Each structure stands twice: as structure tokens, then as C-alpha cells.
Length: 560
Image 1 (cartoon, helix red, strand yellow):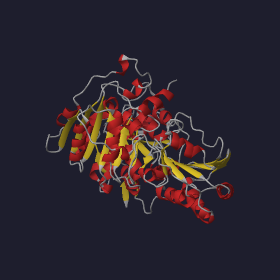
Image 2 (cartoon, one colour):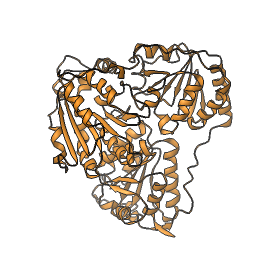
Image 3 (cartoon, helix red, strand yellow):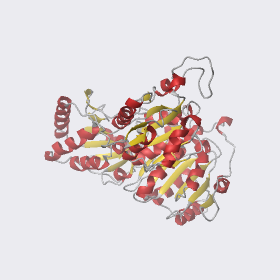
Image 4 (cartoon, helix red, strand yellow):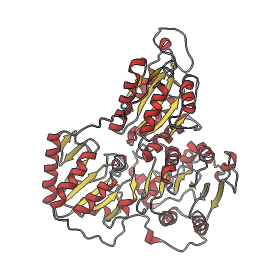
């Protein structure tokens, strides 16, 4: 059977669990969009409000479903995606940006004509731009090799857990190729047998000679779908465990061996002690990024043995074993440690999180503060909730105690304001299969960057609770210079609770809006949103100078 190259690509995306493709049409990519909406490949188009937001959404979709996709036109469309794609690269989300392009003849014919959407006469400009923050930047120019090149590009993205960029010229989009007659062979990278054997041997020796063990978990565990394997290692070693900022995983928060959220020396004192005073520390799926290390203040491995298990290598006490992959190393490690006696561990009744569920209080009529608010959030969350945060919401939310199964992501180490909400939009499309309770906590400064995507959530009739922290400005930046007023941190205040109707919803039908000023107001809303129906927008009024103690500490560390 013959299909167009566009449909071939869509069929391959469907194999990667891409049931929704985000996209903004434009003249150079219209044939692809016609195929997207006309052909029975099983991929649904989601029209976002701009290309940047759509690319954030593709990233969020990937975090939940394993792969994401965004389609745009040439130049003005593709270059609008770059910030989000760079964020996906930084935080290890496999996704593809598909861009239409002028015809092959136009691209390959020297000219002085200045075509629209083209930077001068340089048709390769976009490819070069994307080559800097993707693992593949490719243009299809031959019908005969198109299928191979599509498969190879998707394979690279899955292998590396990074984004890719694909340009398809206008005339190539509808040329015919053979439909896939076999599943996409991901040809996943295989570990070096020699290096795997050496890494396992050295890890075994260190662990077997230890009495106390600590494990800090990172976002690569989720990207590789290995949370269960991580829990197995914690249990078999009887290690204390913490989670991190970029992807906070409630399964580890709720584990009996949990000692909190680890962000270097900005963590709780007990968390730091347990992580850094064990005989051996294991960094499991954690990258050496600024946020997860508490602005590189972590002392893990300074006075203890340390094993770093990254996506594609293992490092043990400074010795690196390349081409040893997390998805292969961790199951093997779990097997060989079965005969090692469990570690010594006594979890003390000390503070492990800034905001713990046991801090629950009877809500009063006092004005809400961030420190009290996030205690209420910790008690509002349920097992298996899907929770996303943006800037202030993410920074403070990372310090709350989460129930089992709940995973918390958002702006990540890339830290782009607005990314968290855009990512959340895509995650909600992926949530159709999971039907998890959906929660977003966003600072209003970040929300104003991408808030028009609220219209997408309303259009697609999502059930969710969106909490907008309104302190009339950039709270995270204010915390860098506490007590010093800077006008550049002040923003024009929106009536966030009114946006739902402006963006297409009907109050009391598919949207529900709330304004919270006191602890009692907040508790009442939490009770009403036990099971959110429709799009619920909660504007939480905060004092502009209010900041959680942790936020001040962490922001102070970010001073340059």
C-alpha cells in the first residue's frame, strides 16, 4: 500500500504513542495538515495559540506519553519553537518539530529573490539553528530515502531522549512511499559489554563493603520508565532516598525510607546529613544540573563513595564507564545486589520537607501566606495526581511532601517562565489515557507568558484545577534581592478569574472561577475541588513581599 510521506510520518508517530499532534498551520506546511486531518492514522490535531506554546505542549505530552510532536510552517513557525525545544533538550524530553518548507527546486536554485518566511536567501538557516539543541536536524529532499530518514530521526530522538527537527518541502509532503510493513525498529543503543561488566563489578564491591547507603533520584528514571526499578533498588539496599526538583516523584516521597527533597545544601539539614553521610551515595537518573544540585552546592561523593548512574554512562568515584545505559544497568544492578545484606538505616522523626502533611492546621480567616499555602497543598494532593508547576509554583511545590504515584514536573532546570503551564497543557492531552486528577500551580508572572493556552484546555473540555499565585510580580526574582523594590519585578495585574469566559468558556458550566484571600477561603476551594470538573481557575491573592523561607534561601544561592 502506498501512502504519502506525511501519512508515513504520522503512522510512525502513532507507533510512538503520539495520539495528539500540536500544530499551527501555514502555507508551506498545508499539505501535511491536510493529511493530518483527512487520513485514518489515529493522530488527532490540537491547534494551540502559538508555536512556542505548542512546542511546550509537545514537551509535556512527551513527559507523560513518551514522545511529542509539533508541526509548523517555515521560518516564522519553526523559529518560534526554539525556546521550548531548547528546554526539551535541557530536560531530556524526546519530541519532534515538523516544519514545512519551500519546494525542493526553490531551495536548490540560487536566487536573489527574498521569499517570505526566509532569512535572506539562506534556506539552511533553520536547520543550522536547530542543530544546536537537537540530536538531529534534517530536511527530506528525496522520495526514495524519505522513509529511511524519518525512521532514523525518530530513532535518534528516542535513543537520546532529546528533541529532533525535520523539514519537509512542500512538494515532498504528498509524494508516495510504501506504508510501514513492520514496526519501527528503535535500535536502542546497547551497552558496552566490557564497560557494563566493569561498572557492575566496581559498584557491587563498593555497595557490598558499605553499611549505610543513600539514593537520590532524578528525572531520567521517569524518562526511561524505570521508577519501579528505582524503588526495587531502594528496597534491596535498604537505602534512604530523596527526590529532586526537575521531576519530583511521589513514590519516593511516600517511601518509608524517604528523607525529603534533595537540592544540595539548600535542602533540609536532615536530608543533607542522610544523603552525604552514608557510606555510599547513588545518584540514580539525576543529571548534574544547577537546580537539582542546589546551585551546585551538593557535596555528594566528597567524603563517601559515590555512584552516578546517568542516561548513557556510569561514573564511580570519578572513574567513568561510557556506553553503559541506565535502562540496562539498573536492572542488572538490582539482580547482583540481591545477595548483599541490607543496609543499616534508621529514619529519624526530623523535618524532611519544608511543607509536610503532618503540619496540617485548622484554616483561619488570616490572609494566606506562601508558607501556610503549601502546607495546604501538601494535604490537598492525592496519590497518582498529575501535578505541574511554573516557576514560583514549581520552586515551592518541589519542597512539599507528595503522596505515592504523584509526579511533579514543570519548568525544570531550563527555568523558562511560562514553560510549566505550556508543558501542562500537553500533559493534559496525554492524560486522556490515564485520567489522573490534574493540578497546576503557577506564579502569575509565568502564567501571563503562556496563559492564552487556557483556551486550548477549555476547547478540549479538560477537567483540572489551575492555581494562580498572584503577588503582582515576579516573586522568584524578588527573593533574589529581598526587601529591595525593583519596578522590573512588578507586572500589570490581570483578573485571572475572568479569563475563562474571555477565552471561550461559560462560567458555571465548563469553567469555574475562584478568588482566595484567606486560609479559610483556600480550604473551602480545596474541598470543592476534591474532584475537579471542567476548567477551574483559582486566583490566590498574596502579599507582593511574601516569600517562603526556602525560596529566599534558594534564590539567594542563585545570585550571580
